[in-house]
Amino acid sequence: MDNVKTINDFNFKNQTALIRVDFNVPVNKYYKITDDTRIQYSIPTIRKIISDEGKIVLISHFGRPKGEPSKNYSLKFLVPFLSEKLNTPVSFIEECIGSNVKKRINKLKNGEILLLENLRFHEEEEKNDESFAFELSKLGNIYVNDAFSVSHRLHSSIISLPKFFRKNKCIGSLMQKEIKFLNQFFLRKGNNPITVLLGGSKISSKIEIIENLIDFSDSILIGGGMSYPFIKIKGGKIGNSIPEIEKNKIKIIEKKLKRILEKCQGRKKLFFPKDVIISKSFENTENTRISSIYSIPDGWMGLDIGPYSIKCFCEIIEKSKTILWNGPVGVFEFSNFSLGTKSMAKSISNTTEKGAFSLVGGGDSIASLKMEKCDNKISYLSTGGGALLESLKNKILPGIKAIIT
Image (tube, rainbow, N blue to C red):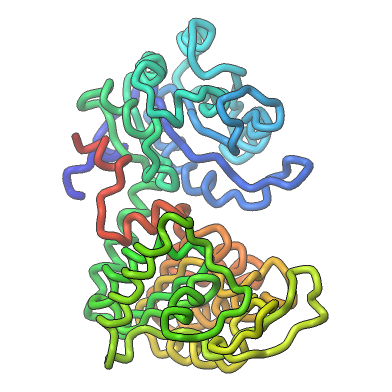
């Protein structure tokens, strides 16, 4: 990654920086931001360009408007928030390409900021359309990618847009931090034991990660919906704990899971929950019981790891020197099924305070840390869920590759 240009390689004076940010932040029904991590991490990039006396054009997406303009997905709600955080007025235009946008940009003075409307109001954005990218390229002199969390996406503003800037393209401060801490995780081989905790429901997105990290890590803890496909293959009865797998991929995934289990046979490397909290539904939270993960009755499903599993997982975490966590170990949105995930959050933060290095990514994992008010005790909170996972497969993200080439 040494050949990736950063904002520090440019002087932005009298230049117009077209910054691809990810301001797809969670909001409540009043459009109040509930987690501003991604915005906070991008502020240093914006401030650097302002201090250089450059002009700034911000482009982002928000939600999934499916190529159609919608007030519900407009970025306009961000203007007062950004203006306050940056301590400078941020202007807005309800378009992201076209002559009106170019006119507004031409009127920008050094140090001024313009936020454009949602990129996904154009279906071409998610189709990686080069014509759309070309129109966007007319809006700046230097392209800056500061959107790590979408840099695994093959979208127009991530992949095609940088091509039109030739050598005038770089990554921002947020991207620098993400790369730095991912490298720090992979380079800490000497700081053993290394523990990886993977949860959530999408096993298909994490199989390659498990395969890639088997020899690198000392312990891989598997929780949440991810654990049930493994248990089923090992001969366990998982009741109605249906894993999130596409029907056409079941056989392929089962083959990969068997390969992982075979590779770990005889090695204390891969750890699954022994007990789980089960229920017949998410809503019927009063009717819960503890069950062995290998013998969940029909009609019941596992919705959290049990007390014995919490104890075992925490003991492994607390002996670790390097920890990576992605994904909850239960349906933590419901209080009856949140103890496992909350316990992981506390254990990782406590171990970090004692000197371990911890890297946590994924919205649910970070949300649980914030629920327990221990997010500020983690070494680094990654803004990317999918992008972090792709990086852990030991691959260069498409968005970074587009800056290098």
